[in-house]
Image 1 (tube, helix red, strand yellow):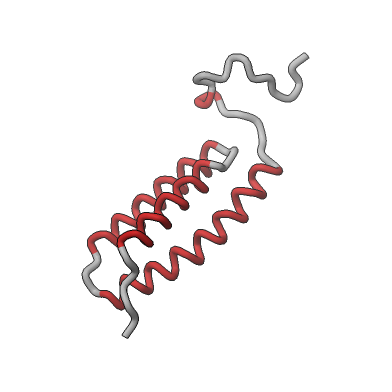
Image 2 (spheres, one colour):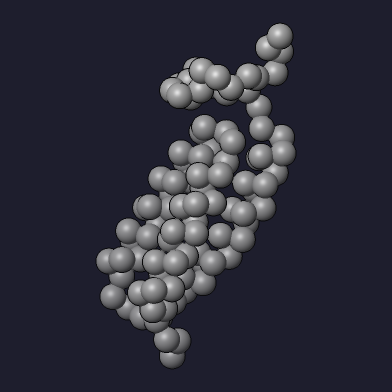
Amino acid sequence: MAAAPTREALTSLYTSMLRTSQSFSSYNFRHYFVRKTKDSFKAMETEKDTLKLSTMYNDAVKEHAVLKRSAIVNQLYGGWRLAVETEGQEGIRERGDN
């Protein structure tokens, strides 16, 4: 029988996944992965079965590795900023600004 992950391990993984989700340069990807992370950890929080909880935790660890790689690729090939991302960005120049 697999041991359930500790509360500290869950909290650490949760904060790391949120931080990685926030590092996406694309607005849509960034908000999607933040929402997905919160939903998946909400499900883990209510889970009582230790076997299922450890399986969910292991899946989240694998997903975190994929999320890190995806965020790096998104930062390398990020596109234009969307209109909804203009708050606090007045001084930042974008492509094509002369």
